[in-house]
Image (cartoon, rainbow, N blue to C red; front, side):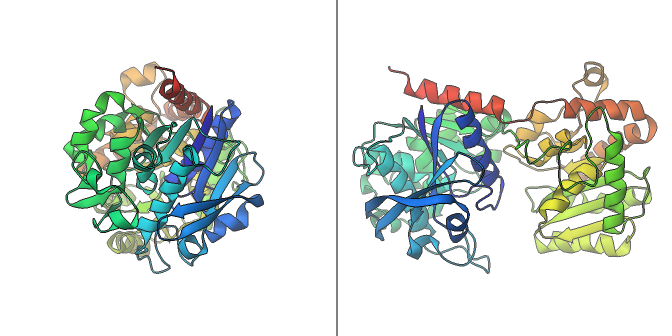
Length: 486
């Protein structure tokens, strides 16, 4: 099985969010089960710097706007995963991030930057590919940045390969003015409801959903949710039409990176059978963050973007109540200034009980995940979510809203689930401050009053297989179904 995995970001080469984590982990897991996989991505400066054995393997021609580019191939360091990059200085080699400049403003030529990525993917899967000794059976696209690939494959390149798109977050759709159709050399006849037109605009994501041979999402619940008005972001009608075909596959986590038994960022490693080390990590975290060192004080952890989606505005009005009852808070994240300010003010007013770090810090994220007693993640929607999986792996029971991948991975603690040893966290009844407070208080009740029950909940989460192995087999099954002779 030859698979071309097309994506706009890959950890550890470049990362803005969870897509990079998936794009770094899933291809490796697929390769481990015998898939001949190559990643295709833009040649950002960081990517060109970090790949090993990088060399030019082909010339790309007939591309929109830039006409020509080089195709290079290298490997992610310390792996055998092959990465093909589009080398185009004018499109990708500039200061800033993958999608926006150093000031956070979206690149005005993003339609070309990701249109070219999509076009190259289609060329490499078609009869005019410059690579004669490797052609994919399946082109696996990810999110809007690769959404034009299935359209180019079917309408322009007449590729024999099958296309599949994975939806990581429906909130981002890549919608642009119709003038880009000519620039991107897309057929105007397909700028229609039965095509890639969306409210008078060209939608990269709609193109992917409409033309792909298969659709997956990053959790079973999210596959159902995106077919509703609340979570479909205007594309629920099209998704409902293809509803029976949409397969939800829960993400795994990179167990080499996230493993409390071997985490280099922790002062002491620990496991489900040796949880004492977790208490040492907690006291070290309290000391590092300037919190009062107290093993019995329930330490709540947050590592998150501070946005409406993540639901942390629901934590602000109840946090003082929790602090007054003896809780502490360790928060790492950045986002909306109103939320940054609200949490920073809590830290100023409660200096020994609240630590707020604005920004991102990889070692600290591991230390918060390991050192806290419970992890707060009340997202209003969450296609999959990785942090709750890290919480489970680190014996830090997650407190979550019942949505998407959170609902698929966190089992609420009640009499039945505790008895059958599936309880591994606490699930809110609705997305509200009152429900979040009630859920945290339920967790505190167990934490403060029943140590053996709390240990059981921790162990239930830590005993789960959260690696990519199971997910990789599910993706392989989709590829095999797609390529089965009719």
